[in-house]
Length: 344
Image (cartoon, rainbow, N blue to C red; front, side, top):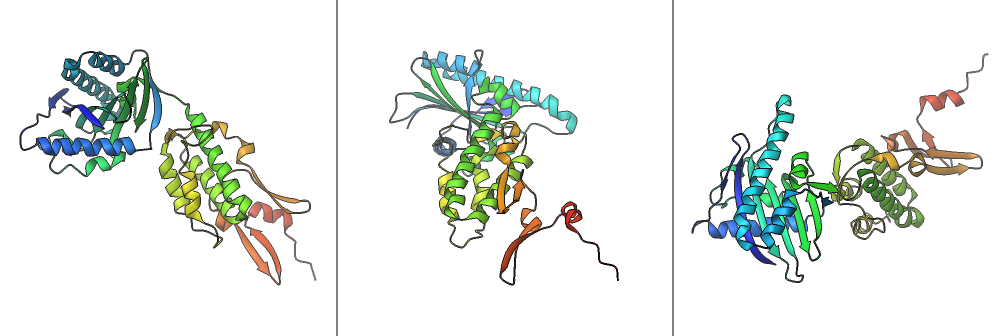
């Protein structure tokens, strides 16, 4: 990639002021290396959500002005820094009654061109760590960009015909308001498409290959995970790691690593796309989709109508004298089948 411009501004949210990081002879190389490392980590980050600009977005308007006048870069950067401070000050007012404060930090602005594509890419990185508020040489800051969860980022590709492709991480209110953007996909659609893609993979790669116990536990874990995360922003990659990468196979022949590899191909390979980061909304995952019927014998069917916490302790396999079955611990069910002791 080819760097066109790169600047960094330290922010004081409380005072409403900012200071540009000025490169000096002893800090220039550190800063350039820092920016390159940060850019690499941000571009590689798949835990993002796709957005579109609102018509009145200042970020879009001012960057297009800069593209037509290269001397406008400093003005563009200072405008963006001022807009961000204003957005964070508004956010501060809403959280200060809870005894919290907006963390100071810095705004890193990068304009580059990919080597294989004639487009302009704007990268905005809001670093919230306290250390960035007064850093002078970036000498000890190289590891921080790798901690992607600590960064608010936006990667915006500007191409011909006024088309933009925009990916945002950590969709906090102040960051979204500053960018002037709207999600491309609704939360309910993201959640539905992610669940549908995973559920289909579990059916074809696990259940249909005979690993019924692993399929049951993984699907149940997925449902309980999503239900517990309702209204929270989740990363698809973290979801895969938490549920599937940590799964201990119940069947010794089940290849969990292969399943994880298949799941990681989503969302980019899914027919019905979803973002790598989204807020969980279970509204469209209706009862029919959550339901998992299991035929036990003629006339008897076990229906799991949703995710069950502690499923492995509630329903357990049992074998005695050559007979195989399951034991379901349920006080309600017990009342339906208990027999009173016969009187003497």
